[in-house]
Length: 417
Image 1 (cartoon, helix red, strand yellow):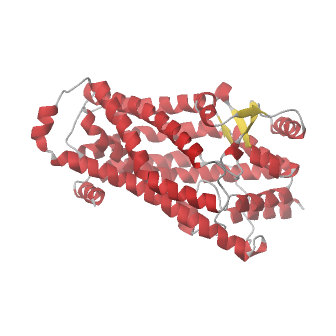
Image 2 (cartoon, rainbow, N blue to C red):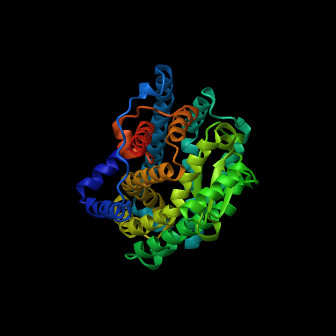
Image 3 (cartoon, rainbow, N blue to C red):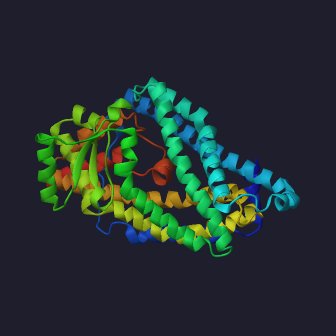
């Protein structure tokens, strides 16, 4: 209720303008960076042609409650931040004057930032445990609860460290530039995001998984052959021991510059045919060829200034605090309120990029049958919703739905004969 009352207050005080500017910047970023090439128009396909009624029911029965739990976790975090902001406002100006100037600015901001990071983790922990138990029930999770707890401690420590730095920097900036801090904050967020994108593969990812360079063999030969055909310098290709946590399969491109790499789940390499793995590798090489990781950095750079300005103006309406650590809950809530709608717009760019990568995978591998068999198998292995609601596909999804991807392969097969 506290968060709802705060949102209503924002609407009454006319602070929607800065948020609209941020949304316009996100829309402009999507239009500027979306692929210009036309993608394959998917052929109409029916779920029943590729999946049994039981498989369709199982996917929806697992994925939709998991989605609801995810939305509930986000709502809980917003509610917790809203409660903190409302509580701070209720303390009154007298307490703020009494507490003003206590402790060094950076240290106070760092302490509050770390506390907020740990607090949000604890807030969503019960629902995260429920979601995990459901994933265990369908066979997706292989890790023990003790292992999950250890990972949770490590990830929380990393998040708290980053939040401490961000919190300290935020307080220092808001003191140094009371009205114009949003611009250096935007620049800092872009720089930090780029740095993390470059360093995460070599500093953060190995904290949770072991990465092994792909050994000589058919898969490595296929990767090198496809990379030559695509005309890209792939960097290194790694296998990650994802099976220590999940039975799900995946692959991704990560890193920037010298840390650029393609990562394949060991569950993918162990359970899929050579032609299916080639389809996946071709898809990831499309991301390398089209510089999709730098594209995401460019999108963040386009959105960051307007988003930072919106965060500033919203935080001012949420709390009268300025330049102190006590302003951080309002800043965090404002950042979440801005990031939500701009993120939904950004998902459109992600889906467009993934469609182009699918098209290139079909062209490079020339194996629509393997593409279809892979999409069918991975949807079942990952217990995906095979007929997701339209609003989920249009707003929340970062990839096209399974049936659309199968339809694209069917259309390619018909076109190519």
